[in-house]
Image 1 (cartoon, rainbow over the protein chains, first blue to last red):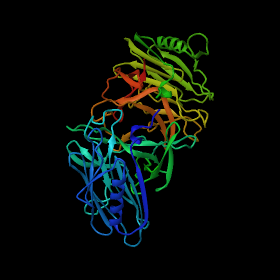
Image 2: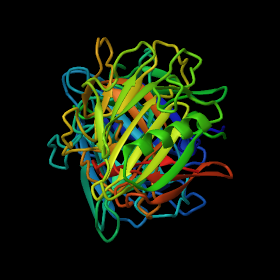
Image 3: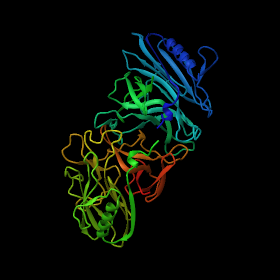
Image 4: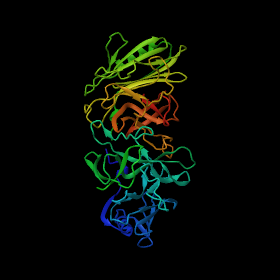
Length: 268
Length: 264
């Protein structure tokens, strides 16, 4: 056996409580990206464009955060061709402070904000693992999403949706794989004996030239877990013989009836 | 790496052309089941069944009873190790053509598929699921049988989908049938090519679930893209340096998938 490729990339985890201005989130996120090994690069000084490490196959993404107000943080996510995958925002309450969890790695980032007095919101993005194919088997490997549009409207932010380049245009659709049967709520993520079943987070995308969606790959360091796990909880998952990883359930990607699941990102 | 357990059971494949009487199916199946490395038992002792599969470590075994209804129609009854009727509608029936039909047999210690290659194929199968990595006996084995192709009245099911199965649900007292017992591994759009963006075919274990419960995998079966023709043979990598050949059977396409049983 071996640790699957999608779980064999770098990762970091940082949390801060009592946050009241999204500038703190931005600063922490930047520090985490730059502290990664291999590190992300920053263009333009503090607050500049953050580019993920260029891997051996030339793959990378970049992300530009911006402060809209103390409560609003915006993300512009682009792929390796500088195509904007999505522009999304979070909007935090002014009535209380927030718990912020930042997950980063060479191929992924998740900014997860527990608002306490409102539903959690997330900005995230990543590169997909194309294993067992070559990592350059196709070029549609950058995904991402956030809770709100650039107009602050909450939309298409549940576990079904990601933004990716569909054919030739970045779009959001229900591209994330569920493991259930048909258009039903079932997940099949618990065995008859009561043990949890953990699955990768997988994506489908419309290939260049069009046609039906095809399998694009797995998100690095993300697992699909049963919805019975509470937002923010940590689950230990066997990832190889004698090896485990710890994954924390993302709070800000809303449940949706199809698939009855949640996502958890690696913390240890 | 290692070959996954659900693909590491014994298997046999036989094709018989121009079958004009289902008695040939009974005799062929008898020969195939008894020729397996861990052979089934012909409990009737005269080559016509009922056949009992090898007993698994957890005590599970399948019992199959076949009967000739007419020269062109056979009936199947499947019982679990408790004697419960798996295809819980008296029996399941399957036709061949009076002019002769190719019959394909896919057998193993815990699976049987009989594929009647009519113009509209009629496929029947049953199995005990592999529950790896869990203890087989915790809490009980799961059996499945196809709902297709025909009911007891001989009526051809208009939706002979591969995911329509008989199964005993959690807390159930009798086997029941429904769709949605297959883990589809699909996005919400549900309409996809079961291949990668670059065009490589994807092969997905046929995993069975019930609501949020995961039951296991059907041995020696894979879900393949619906673009694969009935009877197509697909070479699938199973482990480093190991591949298997799977043949697409005639269950109707649903959710852009078909299923293929191991033949080599």
